[in-house]
Length: 114
Image (cartoon, rainbow, N blue to C red; front, side, top):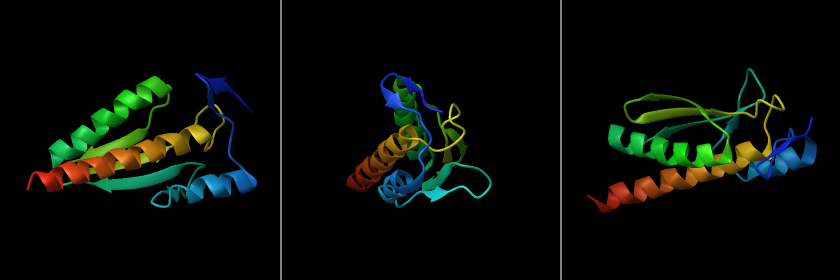
């Protein structure tokens, strides 16, 4: 099943292309109970976690691709999957990379403030 929305490929990643794409986001793991990827981010405090979620939300809205996430204080648990293909697509890989970047930027900002 293939579908492009706003220029982004929403077809399910399989085989070598899946393996290669997942290797580009080594901090993410494949979900055990469904075709999705997961990561838990840990920040200095609630403000940093919320800043991360805000930055991600702005990009996710532009991508028309929204994460499943759960936040408690400084932790944000994220699951990414593309519902139109019932699995992991390049869209998930792209959003995961952006989230990794935002997390690194926030770590840098909070260490600069100390």
